[in-house]
Image 1 (tube, helix red, strand yellow):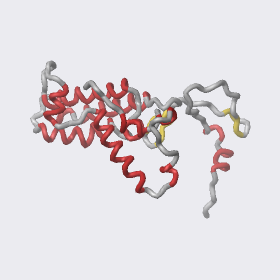
Image 2 (tube, one colour):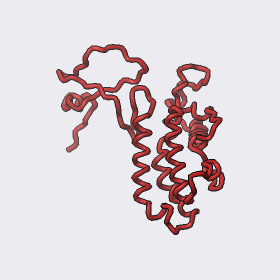
Image 3 (cartoon, one colour):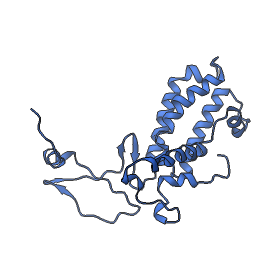
Image 4 (tube, one colour):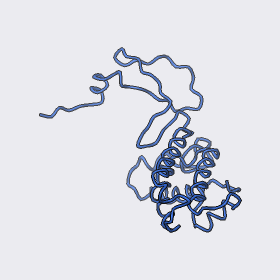
Length: 205
């Protein structure tokens, strides 16, 4: 026997499990919110589909978590991608792209408009990984390593994946994906993920 469960019935049966997160730059003082007599606590980090969403959409928490997860993945593969590993470099790079970078850059089409400080954190992590893979000395320029291995910098990787992703959206028949229209001249578009496609990085981190 099946029973139809609606959102209202779920909230009414488990009001203590309801929380709220407000996405705003400056949130004014708000009165306390209650549902069926239970106060609704405010949270500052919400995880949805593997992405940590904070009230200002800075993605600071998500970037830090992604680096931690990628570090764990790198540690688990240390016997294969470490400096002393005898595995050919091309196979090490394949492992890095297929596992470590995959964990690190998950959802980059969404958080690609994050701050330059977060981009630099990700780039520093990738620099260390590539140095370990090729067993490079400290004085070797990071750009030389990237060029030799044909690995894009983090900023270029974000732009490439974002461009490929957003170019496919017009082909999807879903009105919610088409609105609101993206206009980079509008201040409200500054935080939208599409801004990663227009970012310009002058210096290599």
